[in-house]
Amino acid sequence: MLLAADDRAGLEAAHVRLLAAARHRVCIYLPQLEAGLLDGEAALAELRRVATSGRQAQIRILTHDAERAHREGHRLLALAQRLPTAIGVRVPTEDAQLRYGSAFTTDCAGGFLFRPVATRYEARGSLDDPGETSRLTAYFEEVWERAEPAWQIRPLGI
Image (cartoon, rainbow, N blue to C red; front, top):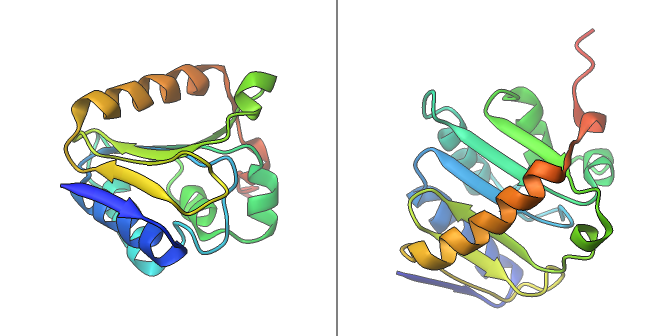
């Protein structure tokens, strides 16, 4: 099943459809965590469902400016703070990775949603394309391994 979007509402709906099909693992690469994207009730409910789906649950998020998103109160980061064992957030450190201009979300079931230009809402994807999902996930893994944990969003635990 194909996914497509050309505006904010369509992109949010495509994310919700992809997340609803996800089982236990999701990778999210969003250079900028924008308000209104992945912080709506439906998207957060699906992310919460995946994060609490069992021992295999894992949501990993790569973003270039977690501190700004945290200051602006992005609800996805608030969810990550409440479920730190299932949701990890990292920030790339290498210049080449910080210049990456696309955004994508993948799931372990073979689905993906890809935005060629992260600052635009146009996206394409599929709920069943293991080849493209594997390619995007491999890139995500490469960046994830070199990225640093987003320590600035950790709760103080006082």
